[in-house]
Length: 446
Image 1 (spheres, rainbow, N blue to C red):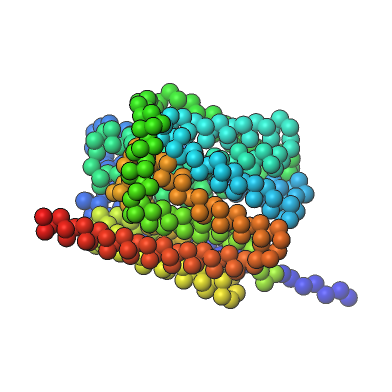
Image 2 (cartoon, rainbow, N blue to C red; image 1 turned 90 degrees about the horizontal axis):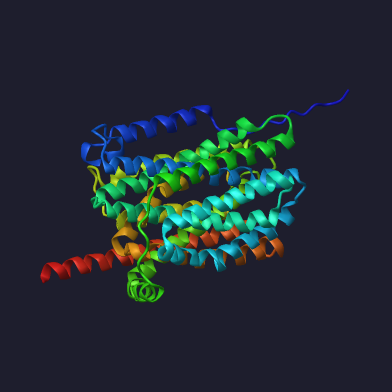
């Protein structure tokens, strides 16, 4: 008589989703009046409200497009028989493209206009979707190059475009701060939506699965292109390359505060990239079956919840100094990675630690955007944001080659590097806070 061994698949408690949703709901709608975003205002329509709602709509569409390939990219590679070893080289090529080409797209965006770069983002996604649909081929190398460039554009161009348009409308800084955390909230919600959309399109026919995802990406991209080209106008850029180079050197290269802020941004970007590549192998390291598809929205839900805490901390009744708060948040994020890198934890503990990381990240991302508005002129914002990612992409490319190709670096080592980077970012923000206090005191003495 044979013995049947039942395997239990680990899944998060369903009540966790309800808890996150309720917390987000009350965190948003219990905000004090002075901290409530204008986008939720039901007053008569104005140019500001139209701008906010229009931008959040097409930014959410862009996030859905970006999320579709991030969620189902590995699934597609597995279907076509691509092994984990074979996946390493396209990933390296993607980070290489982001390093040597994507790093300079921010300056190009500042020169020719952010709308054109956003349209390039859509065209890259449209090209990949049409190519896969026509050839019925994974196009691993082509997809890796195009989607890496699109991700680089997504990391800076939409935010910069929103800030420039907000400045043209002559709105106050608190209005801009609301848009920062709403962008983080909308992006995380859209990534969850892309997963829901992809799961809905998937059925028993695998060939139809891949085709349906490509069709969805193509349709959403065409809608976004039509929406942006017809519904949004952008003033032509008047600065020449020579003027831009002088402005960039004076406001970015020569400013030590920008160097510190750039390093903080690079460390956060590196930690996020390390997380998305290593979270699944880390959780399934003990060999147990885990429902990764149900864990993924928990992380994004935690980031959504964290982003709703931004107005409470800086615009609401608490009113904490931003640099000081970021120091503690980055230390907590570094401790999370340190615990995971030091020793393996139970799956439930790992999930809670990673959710804590994303909850902190939900506050850190809009806070860094606000600091960029304080220190970086709009004319060079895109170039500063893209160039600040050079150290993160370079280090991660090196670690990816050594760990994934030569097998000389463990995953725990990469997590340890990310933890050290976050601790160093906290030190940089502490120095930035001290410089800010000294500048404030000097102005008062004058």
